[in-house]
Image 1 (cartoon, one colour):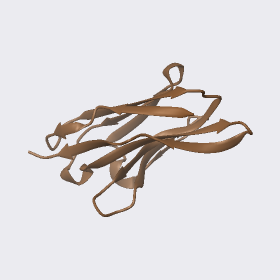
Image 2 (cartoon, rainbow, N blue to C red):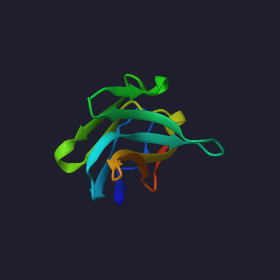
Image 3 (cartoon, rainbow, N blue to C red):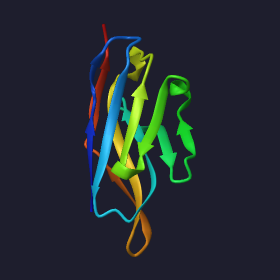
Image 4 (cartoon, helix red, strand yellow):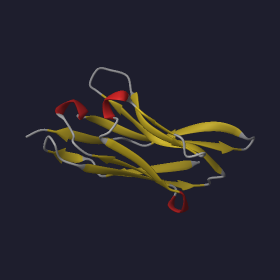
Length: 120
C-alpha cells in the first residue's frame, strides 16, 4: 500500500504563486509516474501535469509556461509550482502516483485532494 499526503493548497490572488507538494510513503518498489490532476465542480478530473521515471514531462495546454512540475526521488515527493494563477485554476488538485508492485503490475494511488482557490 502507498499513501499520499498533499499540502500547499489554499487561497491565492490572481497573478500569485502557490506550491503544492505530495509525499508518497509505504511500500514502494518502483515509481513509474507522479503527477497532478484537478477537478472543477461537476466535471471529471483532468490531468494537469505529470513526470515519468525517464524524466519526461506532460503539461495540460492551459498551464504551460505557468506551472512547473518537479520531483525529489529521494523523498518520493512531487511538487507543482503554480505561477501566474488565474481564477480558472480554481479547483481541487489531486496528486497521484503510479507504482509497480507484486505481481509486478502497475497500480495508481491517489491523494485526498487539496483545494486551490484563486480570488481577489
